[in-house]
Amino acid sequence: MSLGPEVRRGGNLPFGMFAAQWMCDCRYSTNARTLYGILITYADTQDRTTAKGRPYRSALARQLGVSLATLDRTLLELEVGGMVRIEPRKDPNNPLQNEANIYHLLDAPLMWQGNGTWADPLGPDVKAADVAKAVTEARRAEKRDAGVVRKGGVAKGISTKAVKAAREAADSEEGGSSTHAAIPGSTHAARVAAQVLPFIQSPVQTPSPDPEAPSGRSPVDGRSPSTSGSSAPGDEGGSAASGKTKPAPSKPAKSSKARHTRDELAIVDQVLAYLPPQIPASKVRIPTVADAILAAMREEARSVEEMGERINARWADHGFADKADAGTLKKLVGTVIALVRPLRRGDRYACADIRCEDGRNLDTDEPCRLCEVRAADWKAAQQRKRAAAGGDRDRRDSTPAMPSQRATEAPARPLMEDCSGPYCTQSIPAGKGPLCGDCLEQQEAEAASAALAAQWEADQAQAAEQATADAELAAEREQEAAERTALQEAEAAQRAAAEDEQRRKTAEEDARLRAEFARQHPELAAFSSQGPAPF
Image (cartoon, rainbow, N blue to C red; front, side, top):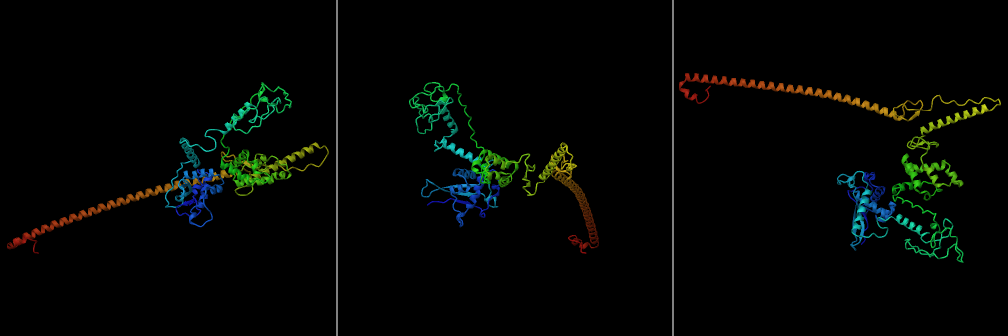
């Protein structure tokens, strides 16, 4: 029984919901974030009816637009970045063979509360692709240490360019190519013709031709050609045998580092897709064009769509389409660079505003004010030149003629003036005020900040006054409470003293009455001493 691949996702999330935190994190590559979105479309499809199918590696690679090797690297990047956990499985019928994987998406804690917490395994500014590359290198080193021989390819540490350079050096020392074909030397002396040999990779294994064989350029009767180009008998190459010929200098090995990344090349391909049919993209897909496209997008903050609009507009408005129709468009690379490059000083729409494109603002889609002012200045300068040229012709002409029409006078003041703000280098239309828009905004911001600071100080002073009043009121209340307590204690003491005095007087009166009663009734004195007085 064969098991199909699955994408599982916990947290009871809605179908198609994705984690914006991951999609906006530049630590993950574009391929990783795109593959994460593709895996979401496969999530929990075993529990619902869908025609999406199964996430086989070939299907994922085809949808991502990469090879299987690149897909495996991208999956490893998702795994080390904590986005996906890959669960390998074995074939139930053959435990020694691997089956389709299960991809567990770990994005539930980022979108719903109560689904646990997600721990970021990457540090700040640590690329997931770099961690995946380090893991891959560690695995390869472990295999090399274990004695596992890599199948196919070139051994680790051997440069194919160095091998090629060694072969070319061996060929130059032997004279001729690896097949020892007859090639004329610098003195036009024919080299020794070589026998037809099979293609052999190593020049060391290629046997040298017989030096006694007749030359391919010599007559069939065996007469020797001119020996002015040879140096010694039996030497194989005419040009290499000349005593005056210097060996060709060896070229330095080129760097194996790619000039552009995969993401940059993908962006370049998207821009080249906007080229007209007259310019095939395959003929201009070179590093020079890629540099021009990426530089224009970086310097002027243009998107792929905006670059496509620039290409279409310049192709139609700058005369390239007419040249293509007339068959005079020859330099395709130069044409593409002219279609994408930023405009330079002297171009018609070369504007200082970075968001200006052919005289219109890309953000507001309104005519560029700077371009209008610059065009007005250019027209005024042209009028002054024509007026000056007309006056010169009138002075050179000796024939009396009617005076030339008065030229348009230059404006009394320039159309543009410098902003009067401190440390500001911008220009503004004349009469629009002493400050430019940025300086006005800065001035308003400073005034608002000063007003807020004053309001804050007033609030602080009012709060301090209120705190002082509250403290005084609390002190008064405490004093009143203390006085009230003292008064109550005094009144209680007075009442206690009065009660004591009353009890004393009562006891004295009781003693007097008992004595009086005992004196008057001596016979009852014994009874009266046992209790209170009988009255």
